[in-house]
Image 1 (cartoon, rainbow, N blue to C red):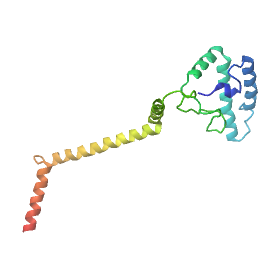
Image 2: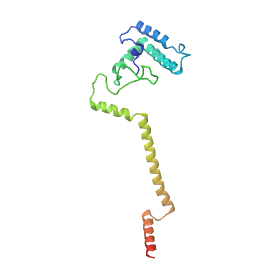
Image 3: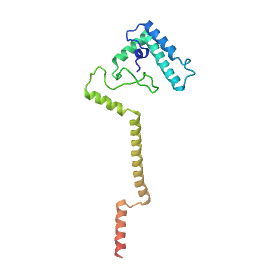
Image 4: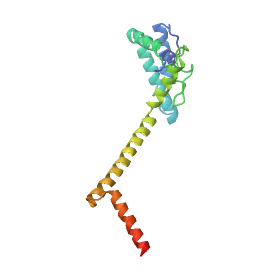
Length: 176
């Protein structure tokens, strides 16, 4: 979750008028029409910032949405790691979270559990797990199909009987 107050550059106790002024100032600065002739990366950066500013204004200007946002952000256990954010577009807003509570509370077990849970639910881990499961299934199917094919072609003989028969044949050839 983006810190809407930081996006607009206002404090948590800012009035509606302060929020509105901050929004207008930033909306003019980052409006896509203003950057229509800019290079792609500048235009994309401005568009992303404009969307963030618009979303922040929409939430902070409405009393119900603001109260809901404040309640969620106050109880959010995945706090941001610092005052600045990283974004793939290079601006200072984005989604930077750590698994630790910013208040420093919580045991090392819960912190380790949260870190492990976050790792185990990453897309890369789940894809690797699915690949490993698929390979295990394939190896099991191949192993089972080999045994089934043996039984179909050699009815009445077990694999061990066939091996004993081969050993006897080798011994007879060596003697003769």
